[in-house]
Image (cartoon, rainbow, N blue to C red; front, side):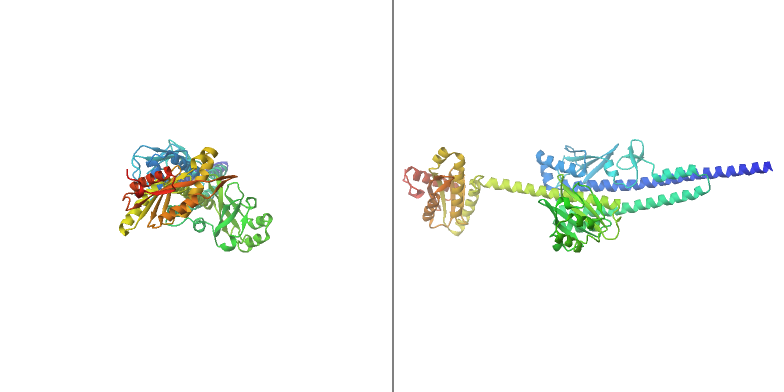
Length: 561
């Protein structure tokens, strides 16, 4: 009997050990399979995210006329401004322009231990030209990209498994794997096999969800890049309405939405989807009345109706939000701040009416990326407008007098040549006047240059208001002015009218100032055919009038010497 019992015990122990060994081998096999699946998913996500990152930077900054010409002409002041924007929006650790041949494609990516090095070709806005022998190089921590790889733990090493771009990683142990092995060694029953199967099923579900999330991310990132490209290529005007429409399309879980933008010390609706904008745009919020707050963080708000009821003082606006904005029906609002140059300029709000948990981590990440792209776009558009304004101002100052705002000598010459060419064709007369202000020097000497400048501005405005639109008056230096009059038969009476305007009293505070002027007059074709020649002769006639106590004199009447 004892022998039979002993044999039975040995058999039971053998079965238990067999189950344990099979379970361990099965667990190791499952672990290896899951590890390879996780690595493959991680690899796909990592490449997708990195390519999106590089494409976003290229579209936003390195396919742009302003950047192209700044690099081409060595404008370090502009480059410094652009680089600070790239650092702010894309969290790069280093950016520089180097003297080396650009990559063959739009960009080139390689890895170094735990960082990514991206080399960019620098194009104009049409991508027809690029800067030769210059390359933009950006460096970012690889962890910036892996942060977006959902639930897949990665650690960069020099001796791990290949990931992408020459980087190597080791996978950290997941919670599912830890649980599986704890169960394995704490339970030595056949039921363990069931647990292993369940664990495998759970892991399979997780990997299915990861794959599904990856596909959603891929489509969303592609849509964001398409949206960015449309704006930067000028295919579409960047309107708030268009932005929120695309956001609702792109972000999973969004059924409606709105954009709030800063207007002075308040926020107002600038676009919406699913609501009546004409009524909604009447509502204004103070910063402290915003449910999303002003801390610059992404928020999911599930009690919007209650919050607005407590914090809004205006009953009419609250009723509009209830009836038009449907705040009591919104189950979840995902709110993402739009930040430009460190300042919150608006909020992108995405709404769901069915589920408080409608916005997953994937939704939040995609919305974050979208809002960041919006910030980049708006900042670049603002910078382009600023540069355009500076360019226009520079062009204006190159053809106008800074003090009086009148055209300068350069613009006078350009207009004069056009007028003379037209006069030759139409056989018309052109009159050229040269004015030197009389009694102006004593004003400067007595009251100073501040008063003198004031007098010049007043006189310039009077002259400008007196000439016809077809004619031109310009400040050609100091207290001297030039005029070109087209087909002006009554130029003598016109000069007298100008003198009358100049001699009107000018008041500066309590001081009354009186000045006058001396004019020299020439005409085409009688006195010459070239503008420079006509102006010199008008100057001579003016000098004759000045030295002989006359207010004006015609060149043709100068005494022969």
